Image (cartoon, rainbow, N blue to C red):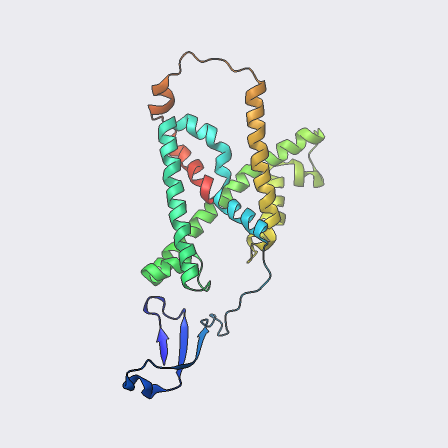
Length: 265
């Protein structure tokens, strides 16, 4: 007899063989010869297999932190200053809850399907069918495109100026344009670094880079705290509780991207 779980069709297939089918008629429970579970076939027609090789626990932890703690946390100070204290805090809490709920749904889906489905696309398909999967893919496509543009702009505005200040070169020509010119360095790094990383189908090799990113976040946080301690602070006579926490400022909409980037980029 074949039993297919109704809510997860084509995801779990359980085959049960009887020893004595007539035993049910005598009032005693049926006896089973064997129970076997099979994973669904892959889209190519083969059987899904999971490689035993992958990230270590520490590497997976760094990848997870890297995927949930985005670059937006670096710009928190300017975003809060342009939005207002209390409103910024409530916005961050709101996006924390959304991120937590979405991750819980994906994890539950992975557990229920024995790791054969563990993505937001699968979650959209399970919930709303083909339309849900397409909606998730389109949303992720636009978001990823916007993130990559933002990262390229950040590289263009920061990498080449930093290199010029380090090496003190005034003449930027020839091969030097690849590292010292704003547009040249952005093109070179996008082609040689960002593009190959985007083509990876497995994030396991990125575990070390994720660790570097987390360490750099901690280092930048330490630098900010250190500068705040050593640089004399001028006491502001204009600030009060209402202006610092209650007032909603004009930069809230512009700062929304920073709050979102904190958890998804």
